[in-house]
Image 1 (cartoon, one colour):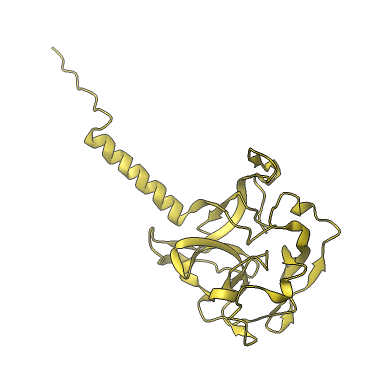
Image 2: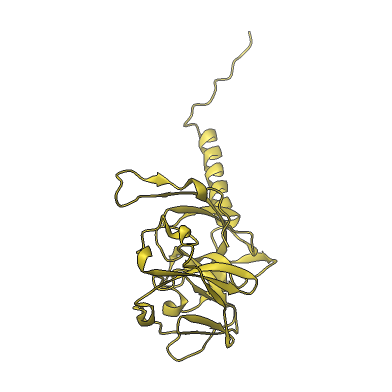
Length: 243
């Protein structure tokens, strides 16, 4: 008479072990390879809009040991213009997304709303003749000026308040004395929505080991218009490449 082996139940030690391994692998993947992020603030608009769900590629610059900031392999460094996800220096348990404008050793200055890097003004082109990109944002688009700023070979959006930008309400203490020299192994970051972004102008540099990865594209996006009861999908943002 042949014997039959009873199939282990769902809560058996074997199944629980396999489930724990699977969960661990997922967390390792999200920490070291790629991870989605939800953007709840307007600091990077109109490049990254409130409600965007973006993908950050963790292997853009290095490979970190899971659950640590220690890189075991490095093959690239962030460049000016890169949009990075990083641990907020004032609260490392929180992740921020901003644009890199300054590298280690750079002299950073903002004068009359123009960004200077190593005493060179970064060119801007007015884009108020075409404001379609602002149609689905809610951070007071009517009082925003829209420009395209060039960082090296990269053109990207910049917004400023038309009336109050000269009296930027946040304390730019790291630029109050003129040029700010970015320390070694650090980055200087800013938001594209220049008058609605707390960034390196306010709290200083980002240590290189705090960089989690580079934001590549928008996975999907949804927003809630003030006059509508239900949220709306931004179909044109699905797969939108960030630059």
